[in-house]
Length: 603
Image 1 (tube, rainbow, N blue to C red):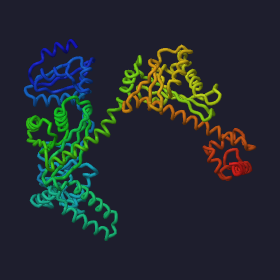
Image 2 (image 1 turned 45 degrees about the horizontal axis):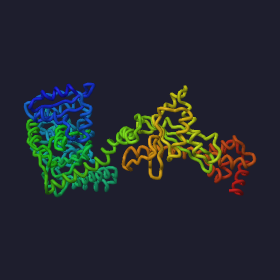
Image 3 (image 1 turned 180 degrees about the horizontal axis):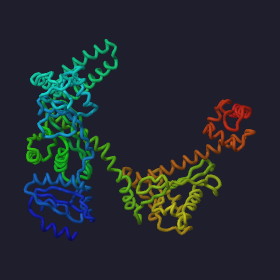
Image 4 (image 1 turned 45 degrees about the vertical axis):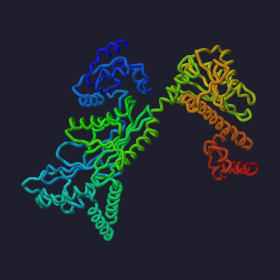
C-alpha cells in the first residue's frame, strides 16, 4: 500500500484511464475519469463505500494510468482495454449473441438480398435484427415469391448469362440474363424494401392465393409451406407496437441493480416494430448507476448496429454518449431520457425485463458464492470457529424401533456437496433404539481412520455437524475426548428452533433464518437425513423381503436373489402372476404356484 500512497500524490488533474492491478500484476479493473487525481483517490479514502467497491479495493496492490486529451478519448480507451484484458471487476457482457440481418446491396445496379450477421458502413441497407423465432430464410423466400428479386451474388455483365432455375419457376426476373431492365427491377427492389419496412399486405395476399391454388391442386406439402410463411408474417406483424408510430427506430435500454449486482435489458424497435430484446448481466460493476449504464452502452455498440435513437434511463451520461458516437462512428445518435408517453412505457417494459433477469438469473448465479464459500466464512465468524470450515461432515442415524439401524455421513467442500465422499454405516454393536450410542459407534469408526493409511480416503474434517441439541453434542464430545481428537470443530443443529450449539458456550447461537450461513447448515443436515433414510429404506425393504420369502418352503437364498433381481420389490413379487413367477431363473411352475398360494393365503 506504500506504493499506492506515493502514486496517489503524483496523479495528474487530467482526463484519462486508470488500471488497477492485483498482487500478481493482473489487471482487475479499468476505469475512466474526467479528473484522474480526484477519481482514483476516492477508492482509497476512508469514507463509506458500497460493498462491491470494497471487494475490489481489497485486492488492489498497484495501479497505472494513461492520460488522454479528453473524456471522450478516455471512454474509447477504457472500452478497448476492457476488451483486451477482460478485468475481473469490470462489466462483462454475458450474452454476446449476434442476431441475423437481411442485407440489401444497393451498390449494385441490380441489388441482391442476403443474410448477414455483421453490420458494415458499406452503403448497403440492413433490416433487423431478427429474433424471437423469425427465420431470415423464410423472409428471403417471401421476397423471391412476391417480388422476384435476386438472392444470388452472380456478377451481371454486358454479356447475358443463361437463365437459372429461379427464373423458370418465377422466383427471379433474371437480370443476369438481361430478362429485365434496370428501371423495372428498381420497382421490384423498392417494393421489396417496403416489405422489409413492414408493409406485408401484398405478400400476404399473394401467399394466400398460392396456398389456396396449391391446396386445390392437391399439392398439400406446398400449401403447408405457404401456410407456414403466412404464420411467419403474422408473427412479424404481431411484433409491431401500434402505439409507437410507424417510423420509431430506436433501442430501449433499461438498467436494474440491487446495489451489489446489476443487469441491463435492451429492446429493439425498427420501423415501429418490436424486434425482441436481450438481457445482460454486469459483472461486479462497482461504479455509479450512470457510469455503469454508460460503460455498457459503449461496449454494446462496439458489436451491434448503432440506431438513430437510444431511449434510456434518466441517469445515463447523455452528452458523453452522443459525443462518443459522433467521434467514433461519425453518426448523430439521439439519446432520449424518456419521462412520459409511449417511449417511457417502453422503457418501463425494458426495466421490468431487466429486474426479472436480475432476480431470476443474475442473483441465482452470483449468490452461489454467498451460499457456499462466503457462507462458510460467515459460519467461522458467527460460531467463533478457529479455522475456515472447508471440509464439513454431518452425521445422522435412522431406524424404526431399533430395527435396521443405519448411520450416514455426508461431506460438503467449500459449502458444496461432495457426493463421492459420502459414506453409510450399518450399526453393529448397539441393541435397540439408542441414537446416542449409534452416533458414538459411527463417529468412533469414522475417526479411527485418522492417522492411518486410510486417511487419504477419509481426510480430516475441519468441522463435524451433528443433527440434534446439547445432548447429542455432549455425546460426541465424549468420543472426541476418549479418542483424544483435536483440531476438529464440533457443533450441533437442533431442528425445532434451528439453534446451533458449540463447545465454546452453554448458550445456543441463533442465526437469522434468511442468513446463508444457516441455510448451508440446513442443507448439509437435510442431506445427511435424506442419505440415512434412503439407506435405511433399502436395507429394511431387503430384510422384509427375505423374512417373508424364507417362510415359503423351497425358496432358498439363491431363489430369493433371483426373485429380487427380476421384480425389484416384495410388493411386485406379491402381485405377480404364476406365469411371471415361473419364468424367474430357478423358479419352476410348481414352485411359482406354491409362492402364489402363500401370498393368497397369508397377505
